Structure formats: structure tokens, C-alpha cells
Image 1: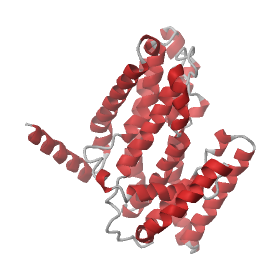
Image 2 (image 1 turned 30 degrees about the vertical axis):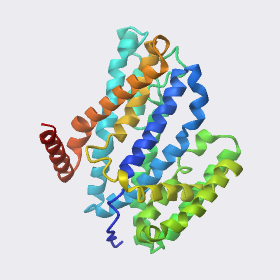
Image 3 (image 1 turned 90 degrees about the vertical axis):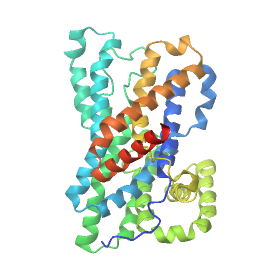
Length: 355
């Protein structure tokens, strides 16, 4: 497929939106896991399904862009692997070995327990649901799950694998690309609504139920010029249809494309946030580190000892600190040389300016 020449595609605030989505998920987990009574009424103000859906839309857009800008499929997969795997594997191993110190199990009960190895195998293969807990860790808390935020990573990985297949089908069988996206969109909608009608959101939100949002992101990239040109005319109908499905009918039919367009519109309208990620992309770190940090604080009884505000500040500072360290020492070294050099120059310039 011919690559698009899009003059404005790189001028966006996806980095800002991803921070917003990651923070939304982190705050929701902070409220849920801390079980601080005074915070519970705030739970409904932090909609994690919408935040995660926003991630999927952005992923579809950026991954389609990455695939079309890669020299070949092998290069594309190496880029995806190097972006996701290093920090992901690090958080799995660091939790597996260091959470022993707050475990109720002895050394032999912990490291020679089959559960310990099930945890490693399941999580390192992105199948977190097979064994989300470690021996004697967080057993007295609301849930024993070490990192409940990681369930979306396997979906992201499936998205990455599906995209080259989608392009291959288009090229091999000469099927209209947008017709193919439409079919996948409606199959995803059917799957989601079927399980939702059976009161099984836990299954509905998995693949292929989440694929509609990813497909929408791909569409917005492929038809970028069209949507960019007409964005101010499309946004009002999108807001209306989204509000009707989200707050009146509680269904999901137009929601992926209307909500997806809302994300797209914000990404290419709020120019003030266009350079938000110039110092680094800390979103991934915030997303994968916040859950175990909160769980550890709960296990240490800190939420019982200190005020909710103080603990929220402490949690935020520690998670941001870990995210920055992860970006600088784990994630950035695996990125393409051009991006590494760009960030090095930014840091050097900032250091000189501060002096």
C-alpha cells in the first residue's frame, strides 16, 4: 500500500492524552486498592474503560504509522518488541524477586513454590490471568493481584501481530482495505454486545471486543487528510452519538468511532500540548508501575497511618520517579538511534539552560 504523505500527522498531542489516560487508570486503582472510605465516591469520576479505549485508538493510529514507515515487517516487529518488552520484563522480574521481602512465606515457601514459577511463566508470556499472584504476597488485601494493569498488554501485542496480517490480506486477496476494517469493526461490536448482554463485561472487553477501537485508530491514520479537513464538522455529531450510547442506551455500536474521533480531535486541536512529550514518554512507566506500588503501600499499612492526600502525593512522586528512571535507563536505550539522539540533545540543552 502506498505510504501517505501527511504534512500535519506528526504535530499532535498524543503524548499528553496518553498521560491523561494513564493517570486516570492510576487514580482509579489508587481509590480502589487503598479502600480509603472518603475517596470511594470519587471512583465513578475516573472511567478506566474509556481511558483504556483511548489507548487502543491511539495505538491503532500510531502502530499503523509505524508499520507503514518501517522498511519491512521484520523491522516493524523489532520496533514493537524493543518498545514494549524491556520495561515489561523488568517489572515482572523486579516484582517476582523483591516482593519476597513483604511476603508472608519463608524463602523456601516462596522461591520453591510452583505458584512463583507459574507467575513468571504466565506473566512473561503476557497471560497474566493464569497466575496474577505471588506466594504469600498481598493475600490479606482486597485482591492479591501483583499488577492488575498488565491485562491490556496482551491485547496490545495481539494488535501488533494483527496489523501485518491485515495488510497481507489486503494485498494478497485485493480486498478493499476499508471494507476489511469495516468487517472487523462490526465483528468486534457483535462480540462485545453479545457478552455485555449476558452480563459478562470481563470477557466482552477482551479481544475481539476491543478491536473496534484499534480499527478506528487505523482508519483515522489512513484517512488522516479527510478527517483533519472536516474535523470541526464531525465533532458535534460524534459528541452527540457518544453521549447517547454512553449515558442513555448503555450500548456499544457507534461508540468506538465516535469516541475515537473525540480522541483524534483533541490530539489535533489542543496545540498547546503538542510538545508535551519532548523530554520523554513516561506514559508506559506510569501504567506498568503504579499498581504494584499502590499494593505495596497498602501491604505496609501506610494508608492507615497517613492522610489520603499525603499518600496520594507520595504515590504520585514515586510512580513518576520510577517512570522517569524506566524511560531513561530501560526504554530509551532500545529506541531507534534517531530518537535516542534527539532526547539526548534535549537533555543537554536543558542542562545548559539550567546552569
